[in-house]
Image (cartoon, rainbow, N blue to C red; front, top):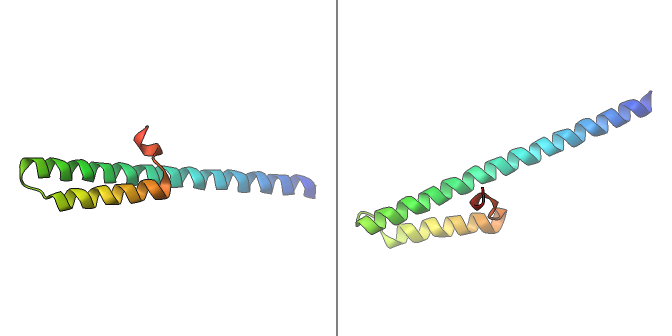
Length: 77
């Protein structure tokens, strides 16, 4: 009986870990998309004359930092 409970506990822990990993992936995907959106908005504002090159560069730097830390999977999906 204890073997069954141990296996059940291991399976539950594994499922919990997989769920946490998926939540982290979704959060990083959303954060990447938000940074990409900010970069687009900064570039658009700069091109229209209401933004600055510095703001665009700051947005690009933030996006690059995110990609370096978490990868660029959000760009493909």
